[in-house]
Image (tube, rainbow, N blue to C red; front, top):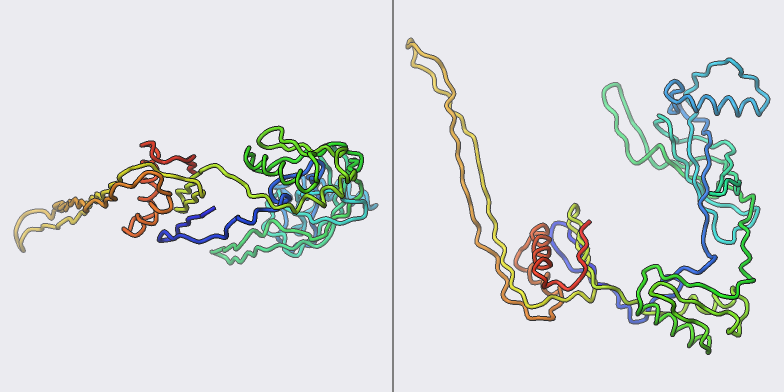
Length: 366
C-alpha cells in the first residue's frame, strides 16, 4: 500500500514493502478463537458532587435503594438527594479461552446527567452475555481521563470525564462452553476476502503441513482438514501455521475523506490516457455604503447611499499534458502536487477522472 495524506499540502509518505508477507494471524480469524461481549448496569459511588441529579435520574435512586436494601439498610419511603452517585453501563469483552478466576478490563460510561466519574468507585456489577447468563463481576476504582473546570459564568471540558475504565476490574465467573480440542475441521476466515489471497493461504498451509490439508472454499474462507494433518491437536496445528507469511492481494481502491482532505490510494490503481485542466473562478462582492448629509443650515435629511464593488477573477487554468496509459495514480498526483493543486481541487480532479472512465479503481468517498 502507498498511502497519500493531506494536511495543508499534499505529501507522499513512503511505506515498507510487503515483499516478506504478512503473518496469517494478522490476515484471518480462526474458528472458535473469538471473544464475547459483556454488559451490565451498575452504580458508581464516591463522586465529588458530580453525580446524577436524582430528580432527573430516578433510576439512580431506585438502584441505590435496592443496593442498600440488600446490605440490610431499610430505606423504604426515604428520599435521597445525594450527589455523589451515578448510574452507569459497564461493558467488557471476555477473551477467548478465558477461565474462571481470570481478570478482564471493563469500561464504565455514565447514562444519567452526571458531569464526571473521576474519583468514583464502581459497586459490584454482574456482567451478562447475549444469552442472559452472568459471566463476570466488575468492581473497582474508575480511571477517567477527562477533566471539567467551571466557574459562575464559564465552563470548560477536556476529554470525556463521563466515561472511564477499570484495568483488570472484572473477575471471570463462568467459562464459555466450547471444546476446541475435539474439532475435526478448522475454518479460517479472511478479514478482507480476496480469491488470490485465499489461494495463497491455502498454498502456504499445504506447503508447511507437507500435505493437502487446506482447501479454499470461497474468497474469504479456507477449510483445513485436521484429520489429514500429522498434528491432530487444533492448538498445535494453529501454533504451526499462524506465523506463516502470506502476501495479501487487494483491490485497486481510492478512498477520499472530504472533511479532512485525506486520500489513500492502493498500489494497483492505474490511470488510462487522459488530460486534465483545472481553472479557478473567484467572485468578490463588497459593500461600501456612503453616508450623504445636507450642508450646515440647509434643509434636507441624512441618507445612506449604497455602494457595491463586484469583481470576478478568473485565474489561468492549470493544465496537465496528456498522461500515457498505464500510469500509476501516484505519479499523476505527484505531478499535480508540483503544480500547486490544493487538496480540495485534487479531490475534484479525481472525481472527474473517475467519471470519465480513466481511473481504473474503486472510488470510495467518506
